Amino acid sequence: MSIKDQCKSPAGDTSRYWESIFSSRGWGAYPPEDLIRFIARNYGQAADRATVRVLEIGCGPGPNIWYLVREGYGVAGIDGSVTAIAQARKRLSTDGLPTNEGRVDLRVGNFVNLPWSDAEFDAVIDIAALYANKRSDIVSAIDEVFRTLKPGGMFFGKMFGADTTGSDSGILFEPGTRQFPDRGPCAGNEIAHFFERNELLELFRAFRKVDIDHSICTERNGEILTFHWLVSATK
Picture: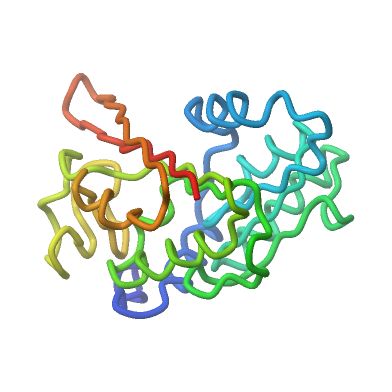
């Protein structure tokens, strides 16, 4: 039975789908340049990086967690996949980095009910994880991001835009959201939401400052175009 046949419930919890993915495929090992730039620009000069707490929602097997821990920050991460969290811990341990020693807090869970207190983090990051949800869960997750950020804390997100190849493929689930798109960077995903700029402004309206930029890249001699929104929002 294919992953697609096993996981036909995008309206509900998608953790089973991602467990199938992380237990059967390799994943990226390094953080994207956009994230490195955001962290360096906003927190690189901190007097004591260990006191800067950064949460990643949808951390997967931990390439961004690995980078943040190596850079000396206090790090938390959450993912719906047990396998992904185990892989993230293993990578830290293999490199002689702390796993759960006060500075690192990795948990299995979902974005709509984050298991942390109000105003706990200096930054929350999302590197193409929020998009893999239906819109109502995206709204709830952003509310949780806002709740767990300290006043003045920042969110950084990298999200697929509607100009991305495959955003009109697969099965329409709701406006902007597709089940199992069959083309582009999200091909085969159980659910994928492709964002519009005005939609992002609405989703992050509770934040006092929102900057939206974008990046575009192509693959296979221009056959596949990936449009990413880069959202920086300050509470």
